[in-house]
Length: 187
Image 1 (spheres, rainbow, N blue to C red):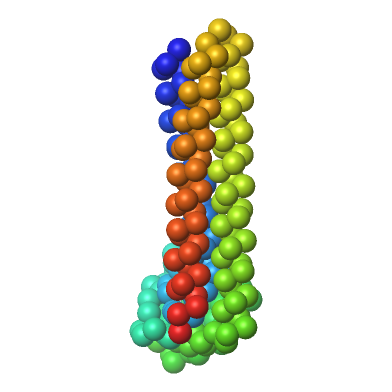
Image 2 (tube, rainbow, N blue to C red; image 1 turned 135 degrees about the vertical axis):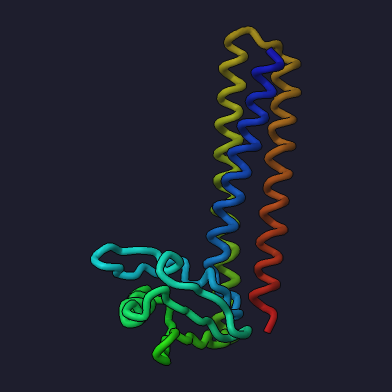
């Protein structure tokens, strides 16, 4: 029976890791005022009739803390990339210099920073909900083992371990969100 319990722990940890990775990806989308190439990950470009992620048709990099550069693989894509950036509703005004696109990332106002901080907290709460749902699934798997004849003592010990795993991941989420908020509020 301990193999099945260990499998539940492993599955819970694996699901929690996936939740953590997803939440970290969502937090990357929350702008902290510094220019990062990942800001344009959601931009899609019309590449010969097919909507394609910008990273597959151009090199996106940072020139400095406030400027992004987009260098297309083919110069003919400059106007399509500009359209894609404008249509993505990220609030950027791209400038075309004939060889590459320059994007100035405006600094955030205090009000906007607080708004972004709230958004980061909301993403953290979504992550915690995912972790708790994973815990619920693990507890249900444990109850099915109880029906198969697992002792009451093993159930109590396993429930405590599942809660410990859950608490550890919730603590990680709190730390990640706190770092993101600090990053957002830093001018």
